[in-house]
Image 1 (cartoon, helix red, strand yellow):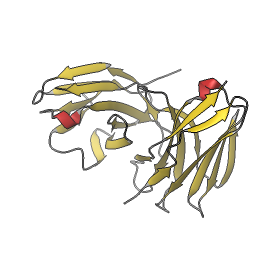
Image 2 (spheres, helix red, strand yellow):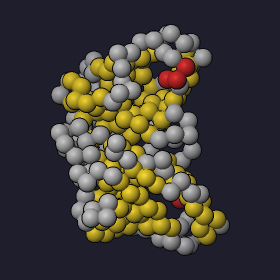
Image 3 (cartoon, helix red, strand yellow):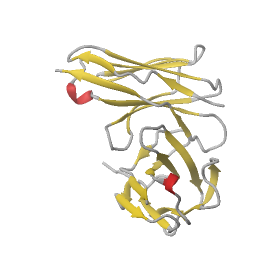
Image 4 (cartoon, chains in turn yellow, green):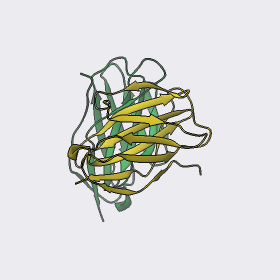
Length: 113
Length: 113
């Protein structure tokens, strides 16, 4: 069964460093998303991406964040200068059709020291 | 502010019983409703989705939607210890092609052998 994959599974970084989280969505999906979940809290929407551009972003997704689809398979989330409060699980998700269900990747646990 | 509310639990049921999980949402324009299961430290796993008023059954799971009451529920029949997890209600807010999900905090379900 097709699945969303994410790398790395765990990333530890120093405050102020740049990190890139990688995702490979399900191959025939067109809509891509990043969500995050701070430990013990709700899953929160960060950004949606369709047709090679951001279609919506939350207030969390400030200038320190960017997304890119550098080739036909990968979808990345970059945090330029990490802060302690960026420590969270970051989930990539994709879906095939408008309004259809989303499938989540296994997540990247980001720890900012 | 668009909210999705769930009883955080924990909800404890004996093995073989019916577990009933409830969710209310504030945005009347919501169109799509999803139930995800999340094991500790793992990503959300899609269980069911429902778009129309009424019941939708899939194996041991039944999703119920009442748009007039802004209420969606998940019934798990013949509960098994492996069903022990946090159940996340997610609502897709209407508009555009983004269909970002707004999640509730989740209900922790414990099925006792």
